[in-house]
Amino acid sequence: MDLGERADRFEFLIRDRDAKFTAASEVVFTSIGIQIIVTPVRAPRANAIAERRLGSVRRECTDRILIGGERHLRAVLAEYVDYYNTHRPHRSLAQRSPDGRSQQLPPGIVHVLRRDRLGGLIHEYSQVA
Picture (cartoon, rainbow, N blue to C red):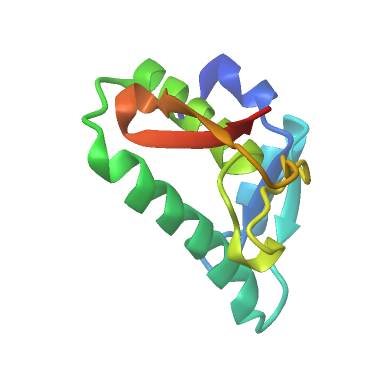
């Protein structure tokens, strides 16, 4: 465990049921106040959902940017997460973003505003009244 003083920032440890996680390793985490959540037995969808989200981050963001260090990575991921949750359309949500806000203006003359994110890697388009 190489977290040092940063360990107190974590609240949860989500782990699978692999035998490499022993009772002794759980004691280490619970002693510093981290709650351990074990994934459900034979629940392949739980892993698939996490892999799908990480795949989206990789394909749309980190595979296209040269990361210069931990601080740069954190800034890039924070920007991407904001984009993902507030603007990016999701097929399972009828092309709405997870925050639930959608800007549907009445038909007519539509002006479009383009906003570049992550240095132009991602373009956001929105309607302006």
